[in-house]
Image 1 (tube, helix red, strand yellow):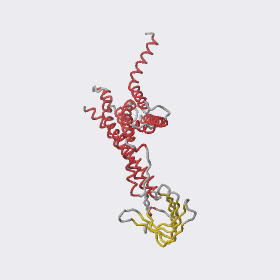
Image 2: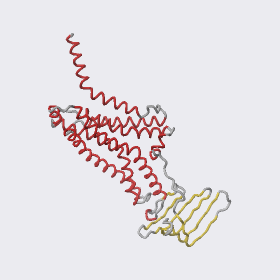
Image 3: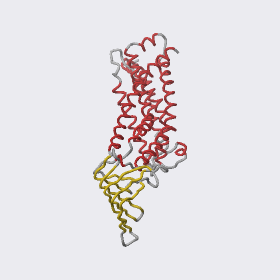
Image 4: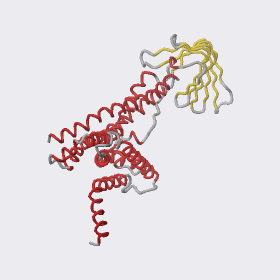
Length: 365
């Protein structure tokens, strides 16, 4: 068992580093996008890191199999380069034991990916869409910039201010347009300030020295009200969030007849299987000679990985569109990956058999 633990440790060490780097890069990319939205006033700055957290949790379903796959290639390539694999063979350690070490490491990762894919990922997407909807629907005067139109309530209300003093929480020459059923309300005020209601904690605008225009399709005349001070609640009546299949709980997808939901359900089921098969695929891909460098097999491994995940994405789209049958559906990708693993494992023996038959045929034996 010493050899198995050594191989597992050699796989886990680069896996931890690669996973941390990938999470950091992805998190930084997502954070830059949301900070840009926060700077433009579309979402509160306080929600940015929470949104990034949920996106990183979602990404682990892909990052963990990717990390393990590359780590197996790196670890075994180094062992081949340093001659440690040859020394293991000389000590009676069979290739099967090396593969078993990779298998058990991948099995642990596959169980973790199964939890992420079936339960944690849909929960994270649900929290992400809910928080994003609340952030977009809410309004804060301190997030506004002068000369920019802001839409809230999914376009039912538009707010514009010529000048905004974020530190003093004050705006000048403010314009507000609100649509309610068949009524259009337009408010124009010289200045405005914002405070939060103590009971409801909802934002409220106080508008000074302006006019309130109301137009209705059911009435022939408009209503014009001139005011010195007007309080306007900015909290939407309801928060409308994006309803995406990615946020649907797994138990609901299991009984669904929708092609999109079937494709999503199959994606969640094959994720742990992909983790296991990709790790096993990395074993024959990592084979190299001592003269080759540690990273010699990485380009080929990346190409195989990219081709595989593109294939899954295409098959998932075809299943969702009804181009191919839902049975086996996305399992086609796993069948092809399994056959590729078997072929690469048996390729050396198959090459020897074919070479012997060729020699015998040339010698007439």
